[in-house]
Image 1 (cartoon, rainbow, N blue to C red):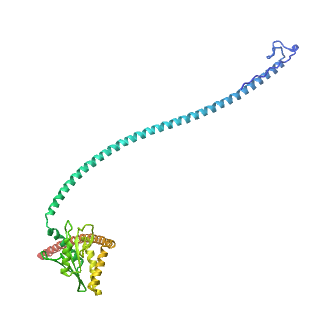
Image 2: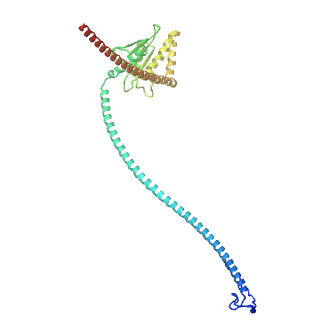
Length: 357
C-alpha cells in the first residue's frame, strides 16, 4: 500500500510582518514566529500520521510474513514427516525382506536336514524290514515243515480248556489222539439231566478244505450230537467269521464260546418243551439262519467285543490283586521276622536271668 504525503498548501503570508531569517518551510516566504510555530506543529502532526500509517503497514506485513512463515514451517514439517514415514516404510520393507530371506534360508536348511534324516531312517527301516522278512520267511518255512497234527494240537488244548472253564456244569471231554471222532464233546447238563450234546473241532490250517466239515458232520452223527461247531481261522471263499456248511457251524475261534451259550439255551428249551425231532430240526435251521444273518453276526460281534473287554478287565483286576497279595505277603513275612527276632531277644534275656539266679 502506497502512502502519499499530504499536499502542501500554498499559504499567503503578510510580507509586512515577516521577521528577519524566518521563512516558511513550504514556500520559503518570510513569516512570523507564530506562523512558523503553527507550520512546524502541522509538520509534526503530519509526520506522526505518516509514522502511524507506516507502523500499521509494517505490523500487517510482519503478521503476513509470520503467517506465511508458520504455514511454510508446518508444510515443511508435514513434508519431513511424510518423507520420514516413507523412509521408515522402505527401511521396514527392507528389513522384512531380509528377515524373510534369512528365514527361508534357515527353513531350507532345516528341510534339507529333515529330508536327509528321513532318508536315513527309511534306509534303516528298510534294512530292518528286510531282516524281519528274512526271519519271517524262515519261521514260515519251519512252520510249513510241521504236520497238521502238530499245528492243531495247541488249538485243541486251548479250546478244551476254554470250554471247561466256560461250562463247569457240563461234561466236557476231549477225544484221545488217535481215536476217531471230534476234538471235544460237550454234554449239556441241566438240573442233573443230559439235555443235548455238541461236538467241536479245532483247525489251525493255512488253507480251507471242505473235508473239514464233512468229517465233523460224520462225527456229529456218530456221537448223536445235536450241533457241530468247527473252530477255524480260515473259511471257504466268500465266507468269514460265521458260516454254515454240511450242517456244521464254521466259526472264528473268538465266537465259539458265545455260540456255545446260544446252542445250550436252544437245547435246554427243546428239552423243556419236549419238542419232537422234526420240531428240533426246524428250530435248528431257524437258528442257523439267524446266526449267519447280518443282524445275528452284528449281535455276536458285539457280544464278543464286550466279552473280550470284560476278560481284559478281569485280567487287569487279577494283576492288581496279585500285586496287593504279594505286598501283603511281604509285610506278613516282615512281621514274622520281627516277631521271631523279638522272641529270640526275650528268650536270651530270660535265659540270662535264669543263669544269674
